[in-house]
Image (tube, rainbow, N blue to C red; front, side):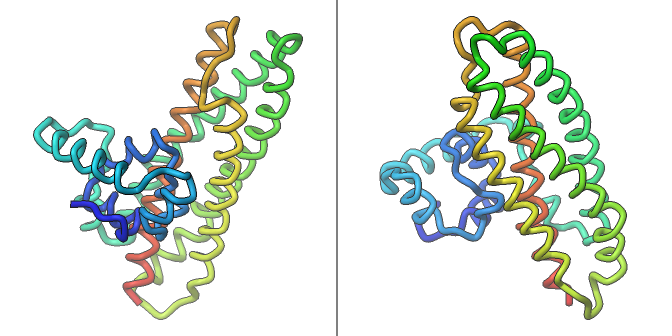
Amino acid sequence: MITNKMKLNEIVKAYPRAVDIFNDFHIDYCCGGNDSLEDALNQLSIDSKSFIDVLNKKLEKQTKEPVPTEVLDVDRLMKMEVPALIDYIIDTYHGKERILLSEIDALSNKVLLAHYAHHKDQLIPLHGLFSDLKKELEEHFAKEEKLVFPYMKQSYNQKSDKGYVKELEDEHDAAGNLIKDIIACTNDFTVPDGGCTSYHMLFQKLHELIKDIYNHIFTENSLLFSKYEGGH
């Protein structure tokens, strides 16, 4: 049973299917994982009692249904040692998100040219926001793969510098802020009237990327980093 005092990351660990509901209401369970559900709902001006009642009912119903493959297997991830969890993150998220970034980059430029006359007020700021997110993520992935993750693999059961964790968390926050701006800029991924197939594909791919990033950041912030710091 979920209560309003539970932290968001505690809820996702116990009820991974809550992720879809949190995404629908833009509840930040990744960068804001340490926030209580009550505080997160208050920030969004959502009535906590009504929301929690609906959330518990939905989750109770879903537990009787097969688990979709895209739902985070939190139980399995929590049992992994730090090196295995790092390999999982790289294999599951870095490769997929690099492909999505490349696809979205091409679509963003294509749609900007095709719809500049009628939708430049949306597409120009969106192009800038996505460019910033792409740069942020690509540099972040390189830093993790070439510097921080190898260090964490070697030092996870020793006394070591935890400053890298704070750096990565700060970079996650920066990406999270860009994502919130993208969601607002796209009107929650709502294609305007007259949008072509590429416009729809652009928003679909953006939405897919952002949902993947949320799971990615949650896995690092709430599982990997807590496991790494707890091992010292």
